Image 1: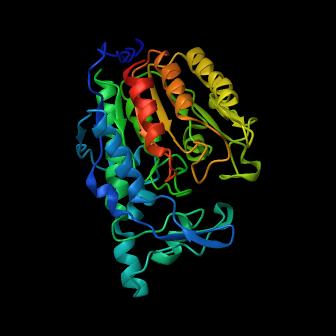
Image 2: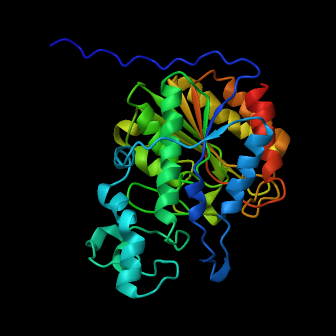
Length: 361
């Protein structure tokens, strides 16, 4: 029997200095607007606010980029990454919650399950707990629209890159890299970066994901941990005493055929720009050795020194340098927005990353 034909490599078009980057965002992503959540026993304002997306949109406008709504690619790209029952739950979760409980306040899970000894409950209350790992992902009337169109942005960015029209930026909000195959976590419902990477696998032999958020990309790790066609690398603060706590350690390298295809590069709280960039180079070197056809960047600005969730001291200059070093890889690239919360320098960090590091490298 003859061998199957090789999947053609994605090829990047040569970009000129003034060429625009494709930027995707849909206004329905504002519709998920959580109010409070419980962290370390305290009821505090929820950090993942629509305003952060407004600030990032304004940065792109200021840089002369046109923001376009993504096309609707349906549920199949989501099913390709997440369990079908998990995706389908969120389609009707709000209507079921209000009908079954008689309440219209945000649906926050207060029952959680260990998968080892459990069965799928029938009620919306039980299923919300079954598909959640913490209380940071409340479901509201606008949650489905927001998470669905956030995922569609990621698919649109991946399709542009696959067609040789990159780079592309999916301004995904809510973010996604903590979401696993069948559970929400850390403000994340659908794993947008994983969805983009899986979609790129339709036309690429190998795809790499570079996660540069201050929190470990534990959901992305979960999704690709036993695969060798997607190399995942995450640079983040030591999870020993920092979310996500249960994954992101340096000795987690993949399993089965995926062993050696996952890399966690761990930062120490208090690390500043020089230390962060030094560790960042470990990721880019590993990605070069993997020799992927395309790159997906889980783009977090929450390493910024004044980000409310940061324990490291990244600067705008450092973000720009990260972008330059990624661009030097010469790979067709989809940027997928992850963290970056309402610290004073959020806009400045995003502007430096794109204007200096991406557009003027």
